[in-house]
Image (cartoon, rainbow, N blue to C red; front, side, top):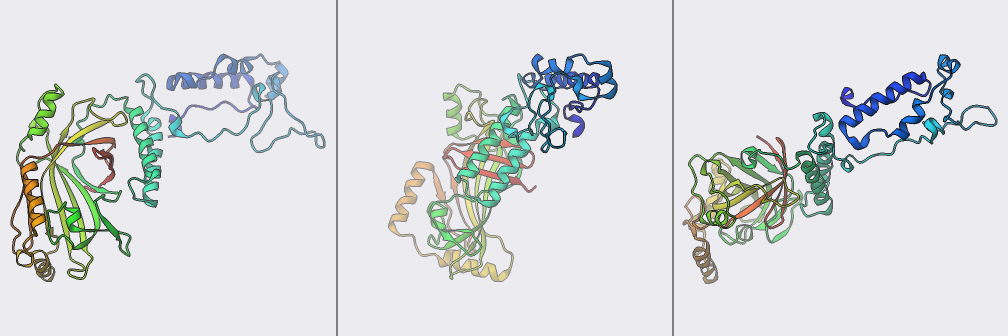
Length: 398
């Protein structure tokens, strides 16, 4: 790493010729990295001043007429505090101030600098975001939002908008959420700090018993190549036509599943573990469709979902059946039946009858089209923002 950094000026005790040479080398290297960072003629002038032979032989910095040191009256020695030296190159030389790496982009006019240097601001922004998430996993907190915005800004500076990577293909894998899942109707937190919800509110009234309270333990986004080629929804076809964009290439579509693992909190099934799986698909949106602070966008739509146990333990399965199985669920009230009928008419949502074992599922015949703006993405971390403004930070687990 040290070899990639620009050279430094020779010390004040070095011969003037050596100091002049080091200044020229530094100026040349800085101009190669950033035209605005190089020394100007005024900064080089004091170094280029001629020296006397006697001073050249001793290497004294007093060979430069511009060097004026303050003297200590009692000891007759130069007055120095830390690295302060008054008069080097004709001006005061204080400690260099701490510079925020985000204040200065490391690419200009699409000219690249060495990768190790270019990645410094991004690595720093990532660390700051992860630090904020360790303190607070609330995706709408000011600290998380601000640091995610900083990371997105640095990523845009680095790419200059010229990335040709398909964001759907790049995202393939299992991504664990570092921000908490945002579901409607949180009822509080348990002793482990996990948010608790009513199952009916989490599933928009699609799963029963609606009043059972569950605590969200983990949320993951699984993006893979689908086993069978999916049908392109009408909403996506119409959106491309309205935008006068080419039709969707079905081979570029990837599955986009959201898996939420939970544990039952209330006494009817305390300790039971299950998962709420929302099944969907994604494809890269046309270039330029993303928000100004995003590098790319994914068009996303959901086609169904399930709730099911995740344990193979016979006792757990028996208890699950007693709470979620068809024989344990009462007939839905009139209001719920009316709501489900409206969902079926508007979105084509069809609920499958609950099984005896407690598996519940639904399918969406007319999915709505949403999107996810990719603010930052690399091999291990993704920062996205949905069409409803929800910020999600995920980390690859496989």
